[in-house]
Length: 287
Image 1 (cartoon, one colour):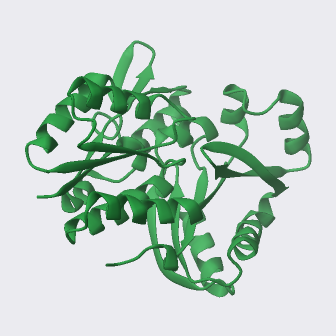
Image 2 (spheres, rainbow, N blue to C red):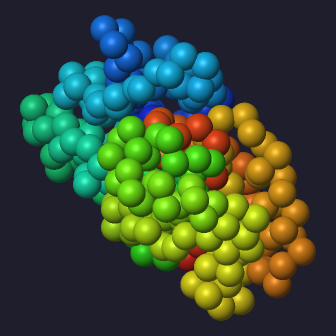
Image 3 (cartoon, helix red, strand yellow):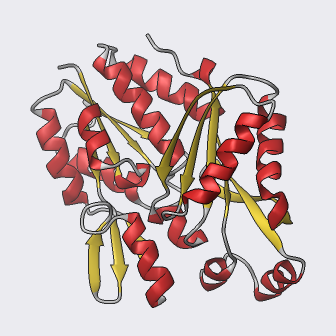
């Protein structure tokens, strides 16, 4: 078989979906006190968020070891001519760096091609799924990379936390900013751009849904969109509300899906964080 796809667990795709796609996801590590868990294997995001809410757990997310990648690469190199290894933003952790090091240790840099998604979560998942579809259709490594890069250039992710508690703990927002936001009942909206979380605005809680929709409308100006909604936990009521509002808006929804938001972003922004990931369907060739 010509091309295999490898990623990491921050794509937040469940094992059944990865198995169907033929994709290997190397797990990151979640450290809680003296305990170390493999992301999505030893603990799923929903369980982690429950621990955070009920026990006050503050998890630390660390990248996989180089040996984790070499084990997967050896297996895939025996089955595929080339590997496309797509990972979450190098600005967020050293995961991509360790994947590159593993390829060097195996002497397989010419057969393993690495791609920085500049993103994480649902956006990374979209690149991985598109790459897997292309590979399954017999595309060359160059063609697979081209499709993934086309989506990467157009994809847009917005995230809004349910509360400011976890941002305060992570020092992602100052106490004075948090105090003012709580006083005026404001919720921040972040965009994920080039691997960095950028404050895209602050609105009242009652206006969050419409603010998200308005940003998508301004960004894409009527283009048909693939939209993925993700939530940090099982609070699907917020997802249902946003989905209904999207359907009632002028946005042209070509395709849509829902997934969990994993701990790379969710542990930082906190349980209940809602994410919207969108890109024009014209950026996703099917051939």
